[in-house]
Length: 454
Image (cartoon, rainbow, N blue to C red; front, side, top):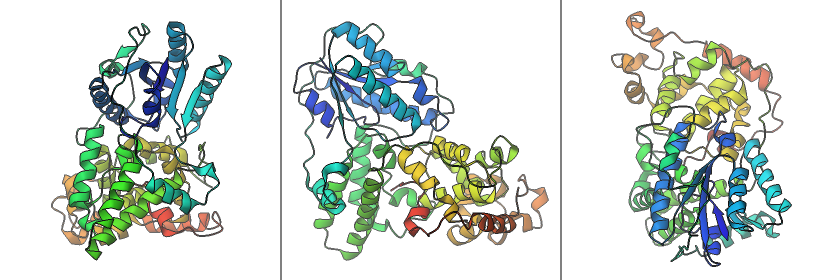
């Protein structure tokens, strides 16, 4: 018996564990909704909604090949025990997963459970870090490697454990904190492929030029990050289709746009070579996160329009360009001196494309750049178009005052709060406090991009 464990790889295309398992008899494709993972503060209902949508499509793709998707609500070790009781010895296939302590501990328990019973657990690495080759050689080899074909047939066992469900319908009852979103991207392999197709057909034309534009970037960015984070599309597929597009493009301006995108893909690939990440280290003088400051930041009630509009946009859509992710993190961690772990989890719970190992890596670099959201707003949203979309109480404030409405003569008639902090004074204090944290400055790409939103 072969069991394919779907973790953050919710697709069938270019899926080596599934392709290999399908060669050797019956396959039981399994997704386990584990309370120990989903109870974390960094995960929320919007993530689980995306996963459930992805599983519903995965179920259809498997059924087209004669298979079925099985789901289980409980810890993975419990699911393994049910499998062992029903079938006896089996082989477990899964992709390697890079994440934080909860996932690391779960993976360790699963390996030990399988090993204690003399069962095989084939865990496929994300890339070939330990191949002995230099990074550029590994990257070139990855770009040239052939994607795997989808299995033509998936044979499933006739009996399943009583505690397992067919499909993802029962997962609607699985409790996850937070609220699902109405305006975010929908999960699924087909959605991922269509997003890649529309990007490479025309949306990439102003990829660099609109990268920091709060509204236009929603179209010109690839918007592939949630599909990569949750495994709806093969990273290799994205890289290779982009390479083909570059090779067949004779417009130098357009080649520049695609090359910039390809470089971001490569940076993402490099970051995914890291090992598991654990707890974030606190920064000096950070305040507790259970107070009013954190709640006002997280709910978009700071009185700083660029901060509030960006947070509300995240609550509604789950996405915002990377520059403003860094702005939100810097404001919370540096300007407000809030607890870094709580702020990291708060942002993670809002990012639909939350990729733990990349997210934490970028959060750790926040002390290296203290940002001024008012200055950013004056440069990137001078007329307040973005602000007025998400803060209708400021819709009648003239552009001259939209970034600093407290200077507007009619401010006290507005339904908008006063700023919770003097940004200039707080940032001066932050720079003085944090100046000795980093011995060397990082490259701009390290601290400007909190998450590879692509």
